[in-house]
Length: 207
Image (tube, rainbow, N blue to C red):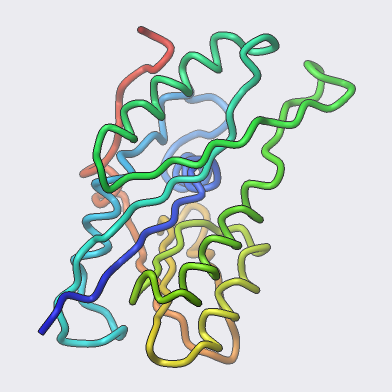
């Protein structure tokens, strides 16, 4: 029996922020707190048996990470740190990183720079790859509800392709997750022990 091909899609900034909210003090802890190893997370999710093709072997085919990239002029240190982090992620051949320049409002730096278009990019790839049958199981890691339509469209393709979601689970912030009512959607709940097994303590501001 061939392995079911799993592709994991991570909205990194969303997942990082949700890890900080779930397990730490998002307002006061240093920026490195909440970082995690995306590849370790992807392998953990890909190997887990779920209701998607139950009893059939699963194998990670690809990890796709979506994130924002600071402007090298406006935020030189942030650009360098993010570039080092992306370099680490991309050192494995099964990882692809999609970095989109941050959007800077007229009131910057009083107003923070924000990601723009990252969720759309992820949604287009998630659905497009499902239509082309580039994966059997797509796992989406984000709490961004703008991604729900992409999940619904993949579900509408029928039982030849499956989608799942994952979220950090903590009593501090509840167990918020993406849902596609009335259709069931498997969710991987990741607790503090799971986070600790894959946390990334490196300070990427340090060369």
